[in-house]
Length: 323
Image 1 (cartoon, rainbow, N blue to C red):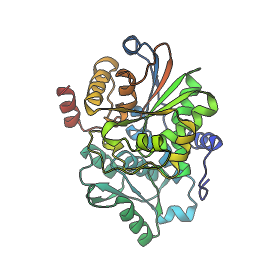
Image 2 (image 1 turned 45 degrees about the vertical axis):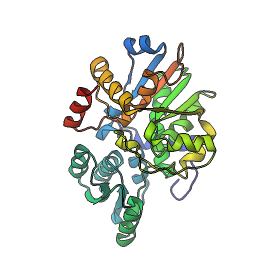
Image 3 (image 1 turned 120 degrees about the horizontal axis):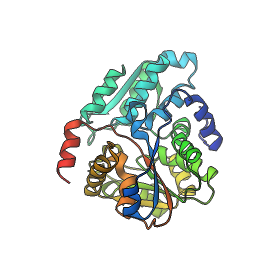
Image 4 (image 1 turned 60 degrees about the vertical axis):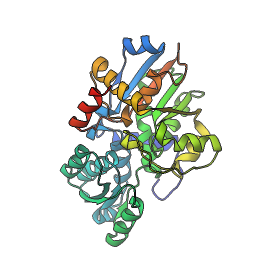
């Protein structure tokens, strides 16, 4: 797959084999209270309980595991606000590869600390004035290292798709799939898996209202770029869909839903109080769309990807206190 710019369901199946016994097979959680509020039968795929706390481990490990011995010796470089950073750092540690991560200065402290604990070197940048991709590319070129992008890579997309693959293996006959969306790696991979395993399913990406670059792009039929969005969903502060992810999403998805920061806060509180689970703002977005009725899901069986649970304790407490 590496070196190819295409990705298919067979690649998701191959990624599942690489991840077997390495990634957690995360649980699918249900809630009578959630079903009563929405009128749906909801099934939450809890990637907040994945290794390093988010789905990103799947794609990072799938990508790095395919490097040649010589490439592994050269190390890897990535850029991320947090979860991809941790995923690459942990995958690199497990595979004996050195990792350098370009992270914004305002990245959540817990994500920065975890990335360091997994053994990665961190290079900081200013999110609103500097180009993280250019910084990472320059470091990779100078060191001869391998650049591991957060979403625009076939192996990353295939790895992320294993979350939906597992969901559909565990839960039959879903009518709708809701997926948190940043650059589109998770959505594209899950769309490949879902459409292959359940033809005709309606797949929706979910974004914060302030960061609706995918929704705008989907409506126009071409990639749209927006300013860095101001939202509590730090994992969804992307400015445009991926070059590789957008065509997959455009072909396979039914549309996009958006949620406000207040709806994200309320959903995080609901998850804490009723599900006894901790979600980060980005991780809660797909559930927020269902809980706040962004689509009429009554009598439907709805799969919901919970993408992550990495949030600072102080920030989490503040969010819950303000809902």
